[in-house]
Length: 109
Length: 112
Image 1 (tube, chains in turn orange, blue):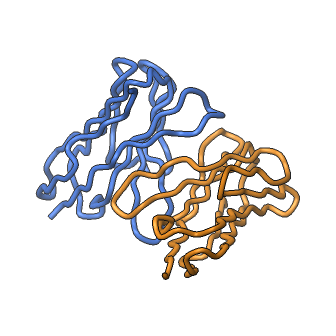
Image 2 (tube, one colour):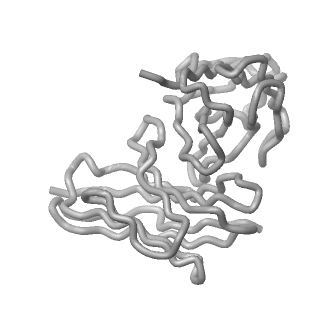
C-alpha cells in the first residue's frame, strides 16, 4: 500500500528553527509537495521537490532524498503566523497526489 | 485575479437527501479535483477530471458523482447522503499534472 508518515504535532518557540519530517512509501515517485494549512482554511502551496537536495525559499527550505523515501521542511526564524498544519504529499506513478495526515505546528512565544 | 470558489461554505442536511457542492475556477485549468478531509486522515481523493467530459474515480468515490460540462466547473453530488460523508470537502485545480494544485476554501458538510 501507499503510505505517507509525518509527526502528528510539534511545538517550537518563536524565533527558533523547526524541522518537520516526512517519510513515504508509494508506487512510483514523481515529486513531493509541501503545503501549509491554517485552521479552517484551504491548503496553500509551499514547495516542490523532484530531485534530491535542498530547495530554499525565504525562511522555508525543503529537502528530498529519493533513495531514503524522505523529505523535511525546515522553517527558520519562526513567527506566530507559522502556527498551522503542514501537509506532505507525494505524486505517484499515476500522477495522483498521496497525502500525509499533516503535522500541526504550535508556536509558543 | 484568477480564483477557485466553492459553495456553499457550510451545509447541514438529513441522511438520504441528495446534495450538490459547487466548484468554479477562473484559472482556465484543465485538471480539477475533489477531496475530503477528515481528522487523522490526509486529504483523500474522491473524483478528478483532466478536461471537459472527462471524469475519473479516486480513492473514495463510492456514493459520490461528478460531471464536467465546461472547463470552469466540477460539481460534486452526493446521491443519498450518509452520516459517514460528514466532512470538509475541498476542490482543487491545476494547469498540468506537474504543477501544484490550487485549493478552494472548502465546504463543511454535516449530515444528520
